[in-house]
Image (cartoon, rainbow, N blue to C red; front, top):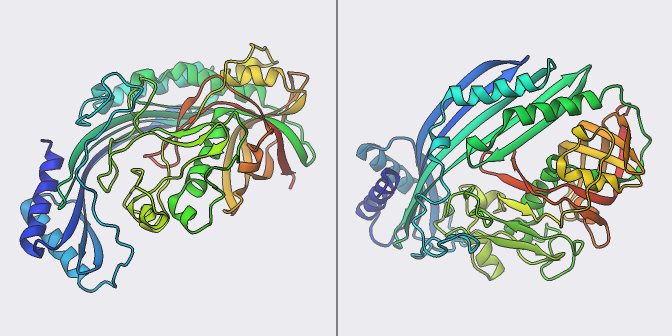
Length: 477
């Protein structure tokens, strides 16, 4: 039994002692260690590391629910947490949406893994070397990135994260697990033009700083002296770094169980809302034999599993915690978090399935093009190659109309060849419409694992060739 599970069991014991057997309680204990090496002006300027163990208690008593948290894990600290939460629950309003506790259930491994079936969650898919990575190991990757940029100004970070967690409740569920992750994100700058390269991995050893630095530098060099283009509808190839933004917005606003129940999501189960080439799977456990990127259970103790959100263009599921599942008349999909009752549960490890490997192509300035995007660019008649999207904001959650800007490199493509760089563009586009039936012209042959805006999110994204993207402005306004 891990130290985290011992703490969780102790809190459950204290709840029974102080609140009585009628109280329902769930406890999450999470040890989180983050180490971050940051660089700017082509030199490391900050190396920080922090490790905290947090305890979160959610208590339901006499029809009321309250939560409390603490970083004090001594017996006195845990007793104080239970006492404070018990005092709070007695003065909170009734909670008619309380969906009860998760019953005892075994954790699983995705069917794609050897040894599928019950699993403790402690060892499978966990890289000890990443969890214990040193500043020197991260610095070596930064040095390789900077050297590979060939004298261009660089900036970014390399980080490692280790999480060990446990869950216990008064219904008898008790599970534990751990995970580790590494990520690198950096830019190179040439005459005011930026190029980017980023990657996430379950093993620090899989991050090649030199390859990432060379990619960022090639993009920056190819993006200097950009021209402006008029507004209008453009055929586009979105590189994986841009597609990650689509997956994030699909997840948070579209496949969110609370939004779905409240009819604020575009998702309509059983309807062909996407092109038949589109399949999206939320995959916290990993299903391709790679180490699992997430914990094997959620903050309500529900075992995590792969969830098919879209299959061959047909929307099949949204993410649920226990509350939204009860409201929708279904079961939790294992997406409960400390904030899911307020913000809604959403997929945090979505993967857009890669397409069949297209015939190879050699577009101009190919070193600046992500590998999986090259064959898509080679068959584009006239359109845009887009590296990255940023500052995206949802204008209408129901149709998922999003506005935002391009970033880190845009190029005009004619007859499969990159002809010139383009200045950054503003767009206003419905994301589901862009991937609607008949509008996906191609999907790259490889899904790339990318870090999300939040530490617990990962996006596996291939390049996308889309028939139309609505450009509404350029760098001049």
